Image 1: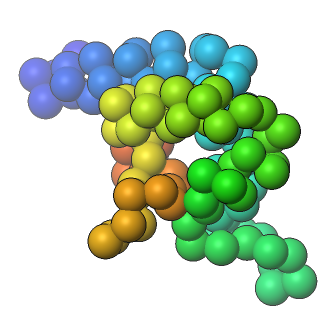
Image 2: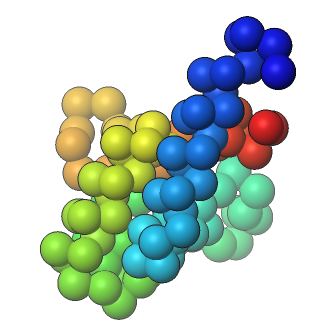
Length: 101
């Protein structure tokens, strides 16, 4: 490994560990599906998803969703809607760094 690759490897390992938790993976998957720019115009893809949207998409209790979001944010995998604390989308740059190890 080159010296500049070490931080990416360490961050990637932490992010992969977060996604090993089934509840966190379910919430992350719901965020990906709900906010993906790959969705066609006929689906309900949006830029960000709210806490309520995640509860509805996953059928999880609010406390479980909040815990998963907290873990995903700590791992750097989520971006928060500017000027609002309760809507998120995937941090694509961080996700790409995780996948390119």
